[in-house]
Length: 503
Image 1 (cartoon, rainbow, N blue to C red):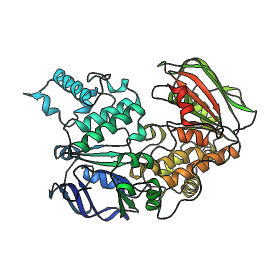
Image 2 (image 1 turned 135 degrees about the horizontal axis):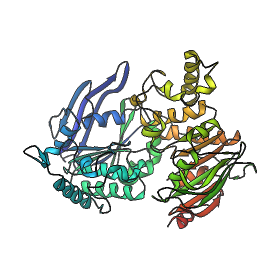
Image 3 (image 1 turned 60 degrees about the vertical axis):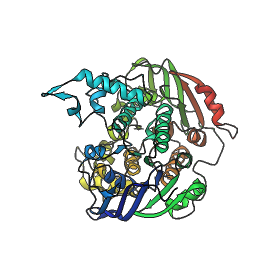
Image 4 (image 1 turned 90 degrees about the vertical axis):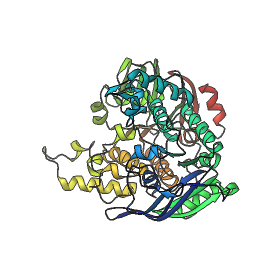
C-alpha cells in the first residue's frame, strides 16, 4: 500500500469501556485511500465495537477520531453518513412495516419534503434509481419490506449505505447473512470503491474471503490491536495464529468418513409444501444419530424446510411426524414438548430476545423441566444458565447481562444454550456457525458431532459447502423448492459435485 496515499479515517489511543469490561484498549488505527482493510479477531475481540464508533452508533470512552485529518466525533449514524462513513451490519437493521424507499432514506426524509409534505412518489423513484445503480432491478421502492425475504432485506441495507456515495464503507459480517446474489453485489461495490480510491473496512470470519478481497488485514485480540498483514502476507495460515495467539491444531470438521446412522427414524417429513411455494411436495426422513445437511442457492427453499419442520411456518400440504411419539408437529409447542430445538438463521429476531438476559434466554425452553409443583426456583434457573455459560464458554459478565450487549458469536452461543439446557434430542440448525470466529466454530462442530455420537439427530441447513461436506452424514440439495440431489458422506464428495445439483 502507498504510504503517501491520504488517510481517510483514523483513531488514536481509543478506549471503550462497558462498565468494568474494557472492550477497546488504546487502539490506534488508520484507513488509507484504496485500502480494503479486513478487521479480524475472535468474538469479543472488539471489532464491531471499533467500527460502531467509526459509524456513529456509539461514542468512544476516550481517545480521538479523525476523518481526512480533521477531528471527527459523529453523534449518530446519520451524522456519520453525511461525513462519508456508511455501515452495513450483520443483523437485520430494517423496518418491515414500511416500504423499501422509506427504509433506504430513513433519517433523511427532508430530502423529499416540501412545506411539510412528503413527496412519496419522488422517494420511490429515487429508491428505484439507487437500487438500479447497485445492480438490483427486481426490487422496487414501493414494495413493503415485509414482503421481501431475509437476503433481499439485507440488499436494502446495502442500498441505504450506498445512496450518499460514501467515501468509507464498513461491512460488519454482512456477507454471512447473504446468499450468492448479495455477496457478489458486495464484492462488486468493494472493487468499485477500491478503484475510486475510497476505503473499506471489512469484518468477516471467513478467512478465505478476506484473503481474496482485502489488501490489508488488521487484527484485534481482547480489545488490543495486535498486528497487521499486507500484500502476499495475507494468508489464512498467517491470520489464524494472529487471531488466537497460537497455532490452531486439528481440523474444523469431523475427521471420520463414516456416514452411517441408526435405522431408527425420528422425524418423518411427508409431502410438505410451504405457503409461499418455496417448498413443494418434499419428503425426507431423519434418523437417530444422523447429521442431515441441507444445501442450495438462494430461494431454493432449504430455510423454509427448517421452519416448517419446527412448526414455525404452516404447511399447505403434508405433515411432519415425530415418529417415537406419533405426534404430528404443527406448532412450536409440539416441537418443544418432544425435545426438538431450532436455531434460526435470523438469530436476533427469532432465536434470542435481545432485551432479555442470558439467563432468561437460556432457560426459556426449560420451564417445564425446572417447575416443581408450579413453582420455578430462581436458584435452579441460575444453576442451569451458569452451567451453559461454562459449557459454551460464553464471554459475558454474568448470566444477568443482556444479550444485546454480546458479540455476534456469543449471541449464537446463547441460542445454542437454550436448546442444550432443554435437553433437546433433535436439533434443527439453520446456518449454525454464521458470524462465529474460527476457534468457536471448531468448538461448535465438535458439539454437533458430539450430539451425533450421543444418538441425537441434527438437521443442518447451510450456505457453506465445505461445512456441509465436512459435517453431514447425508446431504440433501434443493433447487426451486424440490430435492435435486442426495449425497452420502464420502471423501470423494466435492463442491463441484454438489453445485451440479444446485444449478
